[in-house]
Amino acid sequence: MPLDNVVFWVFAPISIAAAVGMLVMRNVVHAALFLVVNFFCIAVMYLLLDAPFLFAVQIVVYAGAIMVLFLFVIMLLGVDRSDVRTERLFLQRPLAIVLAAAFLVEISVAIHAAVGFSTLAPEGFDQLQANGNAQAVAEVLFRDYFFPFEVTSILLIVAAIAAMVLAQRKVRAVSQAELDAVEAEAVS
Amino acid sequence: MRTPIAYFLLLGALLFSMGTVGVLVNRNALRIFMSVELQLNAVNLTLVAFARMHNDLTGQVLAFFSMVVAAAEVVVGLAIIVSIYRRRRSVDVDDVREMRW
Image 1 (cartoon, chains in turn yellow, cyan):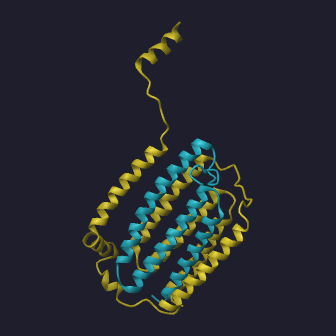
Image 2 (cartoon, chains in turn yellow, cyan):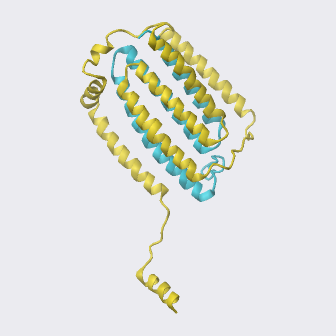
Image 3 (cartoon, one colour):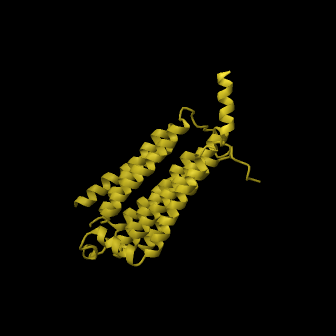
């Protein structure tokens, strides 16, 4: 059995189990930690698919930055309150699972029809990135997709400003006269 | 690489449907958000698998862009959740019903 097959069959069940754990854990912190495990497994899948640059980005951005942000907000909001588990809509949970399963079957049929379950990846991907994966990605990114790349930087700035505006506490401006009045009251 | 490409696509589809279940079932806004992240990751995996299948690096660049957009989305979404929590001491999406008919 070749090595990448072994790696796939080790990490694919782990990622599925981590996703199940994320769905069934009652504590939100535990769910977030399971999601981190899932992100690591997907990063390993990127490595198997010859995308080492995305592997690094996945670990730094997703498992690092985004999940730290999630855990930070979870801690900030408090996690001791357990979630309400009663259903408010009739048959919501079974219906959701049935619909998701139907979707999965549909996608599987589509994959079987379009790709085939035993099609191997073609050769020649190594020649495509002979100077390394990061260089090859950078060539595509900065040659063909340079304008979207620049637009992305605007998007990030807008998102950062929006986060600051949305999450700030409204603080009333205090004038010097009010400060003096408070001070005079304290002295008298 | 000896692993068939379809296995990666099937793994992506499975993770995506699990994220769908999470979005449909949960009412805690943070849990819904984590399920959306799971869906985004599943789609990224599919993109990278297709890049490998077609010998074309555009798929990897697209996954890269999708990660950037996901990061921006998480930042804004969590800020909205924090401000909703400040206002009503709850992150239950059923409690936020002002803009609903």
